[in-house]
Length: 122
Image (spheres, rainbow, N blue to C red):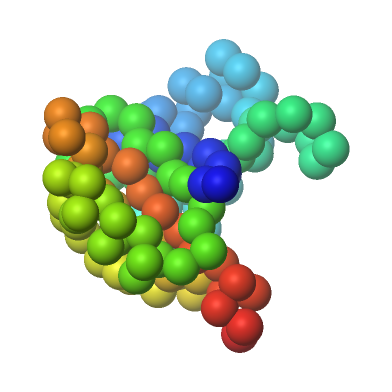
């Protein structure tokens, strides 16, 4: 079963969005330090129900994208396409984390899928 594991807030000004969410909710937000501008969000302490996320530039038309953990990214992309959805971007390696792809459902709603490297035997 695919579990929701991450969210992304897409913003035209990610730095301002980070300040907003830090001040309103007290989230801890820090730049990822990778090749692209990406701010990681910690919404609460480990062991408490909830998920963490990120803020990134508005690269897609949707404002929030949820990411689902999968055992096999290739198999799940094939299942998405067989069910009438489509792959929009990827697969792309997230260094030190796994492989990720963005897809759309039947209504064009974007979602991400992530296969962690440990699920790949790496």
